Length: 235
Image (cartoon, rainbow, N blue to C red; front, side, top):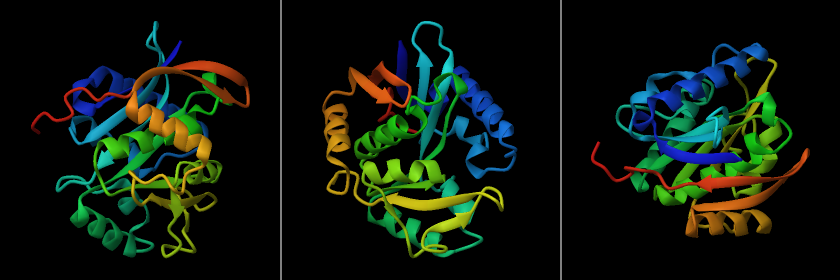
């Protein structure tokens, strides 16, 4: 069975290594070698939460994402990615940090083995929304590829039209477009589609459960375990 779990990056170095290798391999297929969220210093950061999709028995990693909390040590990857094109993103992040904290959902990827199942977009975006509320931040940023903008909107994110060209940037290459989006209040799901809102609230209330998921390739069972071990340990 496909299993999705969450943990602080330093708590599982082996899983982080598998994440990095799989993500790098996928980016290289598309000729992408420079991407800010693919730096590896996050593996030692206790304020980085890893979302890992794996085979429960074999531990083969099918994909994942990260939620990186803004801290004094690490800026958000979206700032490093688009700040040189539009420095207003720094002010936006700082305002949210001062209001109670912010984070970014970044490094989303899935392997070819699960392509077409909706894991790299639907599932990971949903889990990002669940965890943002758990982390008690006032916002969650995400820099979306064209294929994932629709899913960002489904979980309640809005396009930050005051940034770039109505939210659009050429990134990570001149022939690729990325959209800056933000979940402005993770507790409030009023902008989310009703079907997603129901699933997000269910996973907030019961982070360990098996749900039936539907993707372009059909229906499958997905086991969620979204409790983050050691989350409140001192760092």
